[in-house]
Length: 267
Length: 219
Image 1 (tube, each protein chain N blue to C red):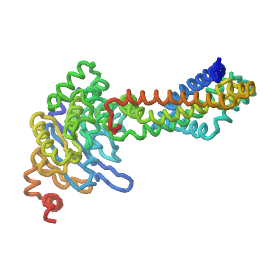
Image 2 (image 1 turned 135 degrees about the vertical axis):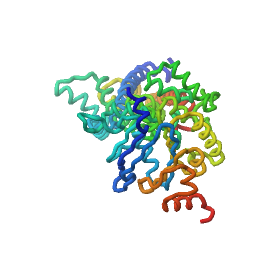
Image 3 (image 1 turned 90 degrees about the horizontal axis):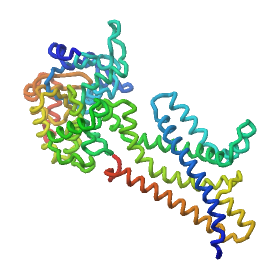
Image 4 (image 1 turned 180 degrees about the vertical axis):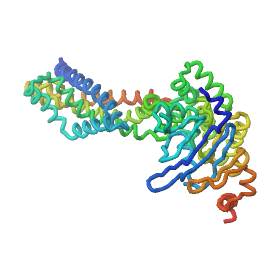
């Protein structure tokens, strides 16, 4: 594999002219985006602006109508054949998909498995680790997210914040190159949000993993991200450092959006 | 033997036949339910359509007529089935169609987020079904499956009409011989009822064993 060469030369994720429609509704309208290794990118925007759809396309939960996604030098939905791009085989998409991990808004833990097995199952099944190896990896990750004492608990016995940490450990156990976080805090009880944000910030500082986060928490985006992207109507309106986006946005659209979400009390 | 216990040996013989028909058909129903129900949930047309056809066909006909068909019509086209086999086949195919619908419903009721999480963990469609969707669907299917089994057990009385010596048939024989109608059919009812209680208990036990940890329902 030429992953190391290519990684130093080109962005980890390259999105070109990405288009997605649901019926007549255009959700992504020719979106272009590059994400470098180690980037912590926060995506902000109104509901329905296409933020979550972008993540779902990257995770192959939805299929784009047009455009390409390239991850670590390989196309996600296409493959090269005689110098031409053709739709990818399932095996190809699966292989490239392995470079991506996702933490869902509602965590989607497996309710019929204890916490340890939630984390260890896919490494065993998909990566072919032995039971012992997979469980050792799972315990290590649970320890890292501060839940080593919950390995034998059922997901239903955990708080929202704990479920989220298990979901993070579960995704990290597959050792993806990029982690997607969908609406990281919107399913948590208000009193847990601060704690979860704190935890994610520490995680982001600690691991050099590339992260792409969709969030409604502007404060959080400002603190965790080294890059913030404002999406509106399926297009990137502004893409800059947090300090610029939140304090000196260049685009009228970004200003309007931030005015609306940052000062709801004034409305 | 004092009355009404002298009726018991004959009735118990019938009960044994009833149990055989029920167990045979129940295995059939389970296999049909899981296989056809999974096919019915498939993304692939060539799996889904035969399943749809089966469900449509066998759910839309009375079990009794199906039973007659297997027992009286099949020999006409050269296939003579023993009464027990005809009974098991007719009831199994008929109730299997209900079971398939029930399994399909249970699979559909597993939240889509579970499939998405399994995709995000890069599981194959087969791994998703066996490790993630199947176990959760099974848990959902158990209670209605229990009811269906009770329904199936009661419907085994239909094999009376093709001359199988089941509990109902034995009751009729005793009625002819002894005229002790009240005793005979009260005992028969009690036996069917005890059988139903056993099925209910087994179903509850399975739910409890398989549902460990999922208290508060599968979410």
